[in-house]
Length: 620
Ligand SMILES: [Zn+2]
Image 1 (spheres, rainbow, N blue to C red):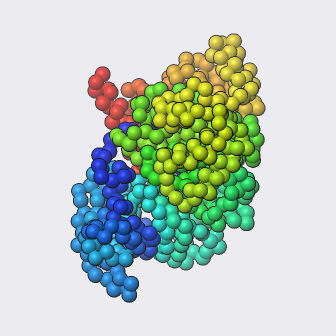
Image 2 (image 1 turned 120 degrees about the vertical axis):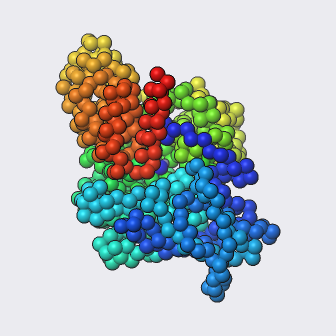
Image 3 (image 1 turned 90 degrees about the vertical axis):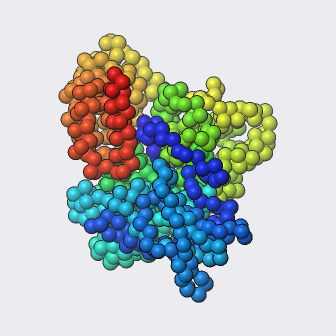
């Protein structure tokens, strides 16, 4: 996932489930493991629900186990049956517990005879946290309604009853029915030539963790971009998206050269409506992506490099719990950088890395000490919070440090070996370290001490000798920004005509948190930042202009917030408004209009921010 969550989700504290290895799941994998799921799903747009039957194949591990315990959230269970080898069904007794915050409801199925499969008939809720239902009016082409899922980290349980822990892997098949003209896609091989006849079948033959279960349906067109890749999007978006992502085959081939074969078959990209709350989601065979990266100049396609990289780090070798999330996101961010370097050059890669590094340096000290660790103590963390900038950017920084110390050749050999060694497995931080020590650290003595490794993984903050890449262009921008703020360089004399997206992002990122008003107005007059179609630049511009007190940008900021539901691009603008009572009042009006178009996760994040702002105002 490309997420950038520092600002996104507040600290919701989870009750820790003492006996389970994964504190975010009720599953008891020491007793029984789900190995395969057969799904029959009917997509009901008017009722905003999936009418479903899930048949779970079981591998019993403990002869004295009595129950199959599953994770569910907001599901209406119709019936639960044991199914024997001949297909005969017997009703089973079950208990659905009272739901707990962020955990959902524990479903305990009495199954002392250890059936080989259990069949559950159920319906999802219209407000299921892992599904978003859009009306036709909320889509780009306004013709058909749209549905998409976002299961990571713990939302698969809101549309399938299962063991919702990344340590458990299963294959799946699905038969999905939908209204005619609707195309259904899933996190499995998809056929871009499939007829829109209301009936779709899928088979994911590789074992995947639950958070990679994904489905989308709507007015979706497909355009092939290579021998094993296509872009899926609404008809009015698909041609532009296919141009933006025309390098997909080159990306796959580049990654294969570095880290071994792409093992999944096809790699397709689905461009979602603007309410998708994240940058991208690495659903196997079918990356889900925000339309905010389709800007016309490929300057933001690193989100696609990131999601493709997950086909190795994350989907092939998976974090066993969300506390080990840096194994997914840190490794992926590192691989993303290597793809960017190979395809778009060193300058692009260095600039993207420096943007992330400088942002992390600014924010990490403000986080609780435990959250500053790559592998935090497994307590007091929401599964979504464990995927913070630390997992992404400190994680990739650590791998970059290893690359610098051991040299690219040795490090690449090690990393390729790591993907081979742990392929199709879910592993912990400690399993990764046990592979790192003999195969890299001890193999080339004198390059990096083991206590340095431990400081990176278990220490707070950033180690002092963390390598920082050089960027003469960013250095020049630092000088220009300083002269501009000092009043010795006029806004229209900035050398910005040749700045790319990342260089604008860097210039804006390092403005003072609350800059003086006059220079901001001059900047806007010279470079027309208000109303920019590039949402990365827009988010940074509005945040600073609002903080400077520039009321003239408010309507365009409101338009940005209403149009874009991606958390990372919208929430900071809300946050900037919440700094003053007038801004807070205005942002609540914007939210009232925008809310219906937002994903449940975006709604939750904005409402938490408002609650915190209200509490702070009450304290005075
Ligand atoms: Zn990711």
